[in-house]
Every structure is written in C-alpha cells, then in structure tokens.
Amino acid sequence: MYGGEANKDFPKALNQGIRANEAKKSERETKTATMTRLSGVPALPFTYVAHVLEVVAAVLVLVWNIHFRGGLAWDSTNKSLIFNLHPVVMVIGFLILGSEAIMSYKGLPFNKEVNKKIHLTLHLIALVLGIWGISAAFKFHNESGIDNLYSLHSWVGLGTICLYGIQWIFGFVTYFYPGGSQALRREALPWHALFGMFVYILALAAAQLGFLEKLTFIESAGVLKYGAEAFLVNFTALVVILLGAAVVISAAIPGPSEDPHSYSSISDA
Ligand code: HEM
Ligand code: HEM
Image: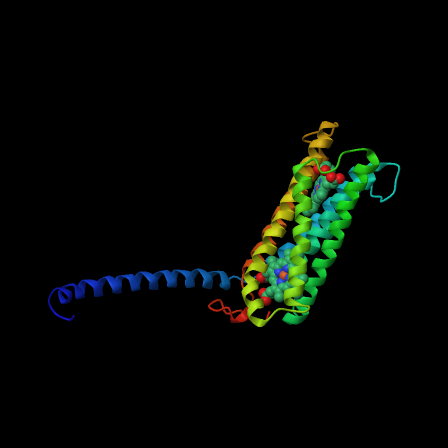
C-alpha cells in the first residue's frame, strides 16, 4: 500500500491537496472581507436618510392629491376624491409605515424584544391601512361603473397585499405567539428577512406602476407632459425609489451587536 507506484504519486497528490486548501482559504478570506466591509458600514445613517425621504414623499403625495387633484373623501358625489385617498393611504399608510417597521431593528434605541413588538405592530398597521387604501380604489371603481382588476398595477398590488398578510401571519406565529422552537426560529430567520424584503420591493414596484398609470390617465385627459403636476408625480415616484434603497441598505447591514461570522446573533430571535 505504501510502496512503488503509489509513493511516486504521493507528492503530486499532496501538492494538489495543498493547492485546493489554499483556494478554499482564499475564498473564505474574500467572503470574510466582504462581510467585514458590509458590517463596517453603520446602518443608522441610512435610516436617517429614509426618515427624511419619508417626510418628503408624504408631503409630495398630499400636495398632489389635495392641491392638484381637489382633495380627499371617503363619501362624495365627486368620485375622484374617493380615488385620491388611494395613493395617499398607500404611500403614507402602507409604504412609509412598512419602511419604519423594517427599520425598527436598526434605527431604534430599544432592546430586541421591544423592537420586535414595534416591528410587528407597525407592519400590522401598514397592512390594515394598505387594505383600506385598496378598498378606496375598489369603491371608486364600483361607484363610477369602472371595471376592477384590469391592470398590471392592480394585479401586482393585490398580490403584494396578500403576500404581506401571509408574511405577517408566518412572522407572528414563528416569532411571537405561540412562537416556534429555537431551531425553527434560527432556520426560518434568513427566509423571513429575505421574503420580507421581496414583499417590500414588490410594494415599491406596485406603487411605481400606480404612479405611472395615473399620470398616463391624467395626461391623456389634458395634464401637460412637462407641466408642474407631471413633474410632481414623477418626483414623488423617484423619492419612493430612493426611500426603498435606503431601507433595503439599512436592513442588509448587520446590526451593531451582531457578529458577522456566526448565526448566533439570530438564535434568540
Ligand atoms: C403599494 C401600493 C399600492 C397598492 C398595493 C395598490 C393596489 C391597487 C389595487 C389592488 C387596485 C385595483 C382596484 C380595482 O381594481 O378596483 C389599484 C388601482 C389603482 N391604483 Fe393602486 N396601489 C398602490 C399604490 C398606488 C399609487 C401610489 C398610485 C398612484 C396614483 C396608484 C394608482 C392606482 C390607479 C390609477 C388605480 C386604478 C386603475 C387600476 O385599477 O389599475 N396606486 N391599486
Ligand atoms: C409583513 C410583515 C413583515 C415583514 C415585511 C417583515 C420583514 C422583515 C425584514 C425585512 C427583516 C430583516 C430586518 C433586518 O435585518 O434589519 C425582519 C426581521 C425580523 N422580523 Fe419581520 N417582517 C414582518 C412581520 C414580522 C412579524 C409579525 C414578526 C413577529 C414577531 C416578525 C419578526 C421578526 C424578527 C424576530 C426579525 C429578526 C430581527 C433580527 O434579529 O435581526 N416579523 N422582518
């Protein structure tokens, strides 16, 4: 077993082994370096940027619908006012509160238990307001004799709300009541965060489609393509994109107490 031919090949095999080990080591080092770089960037400044963008988006969507579109109403003979509730509630109630909920782990000075309660409560309020905001669009359509669910925006939007509800129920059952085993919570956490980010990005995309669709409608009804209102709507949509970027980046950066080299930080989720 140790003689002749096999022995001749031994240094070659050893060399190959060493080279493979070195390749693995350098791959590990690159990964570690990437993680260290990401964890070296603080999440907090991104949450500040997001708060500012939230205020700007809220002001812009209110100015648009109150000043340019005539105001907001749940009951009115002027059915457009019922529609106007839709973008306002979807941006302020659903997107902004949803953004705050995601950032609660990175932007608040409380312990994890308190942050968790704030996270789940803000997501619940966002979901309820999202359902209300969608009902305003349905009410407007029904009272104006317009078909429901004919557009890509409405399909993506309805899908987003359904997935948001599912994500909330899974999150609640796994991490709050009755709560899964330690192992399940640990295993499920990367999926919860990943799926949560996916649903959030889908909500941003639905809103973009909504802005685009409404602007196309009002431009075909006479609003100037380079007029003040068109600019206002496009800028609001851009601010929403930037808000989404700040929120996603803040969530992707590990928290200050987390050790980037292990998953131990999520075992007590
Ligand atoms: C994430 C946020 C949003 C969601 C989940 C959402 C969802 C929906 C849904 C489900 C409908 C269908 C109502 C029906 O068929 O009767 C709808 C309609 C509509 N939404 Fe949104 N929306 C969102 C944000 C916006 C925004 C910011 C605007 C900008 C103005 C907008 C503009 C419209 C328009 C013009 C309609 C009527 C035409 C259509 O059904 O496509 N939406 N939305
Ligand atoms: C639609 C609802 C929800 C969405 C979109 C969502 C989304 C997210 C996202 C994106 C993260 C990662 C945040 C980060 O790493 O900074 C996260 C973390 C987390 N979420 Fe949710 N979530 C939702 C509902 C819930 C609910 C109801 C609970 C129940 C308590 C929950 C518990 C948690 C926990 C424990 C973490 C881990 C925090 C950590 O240790 O880093 N989530 N969620």
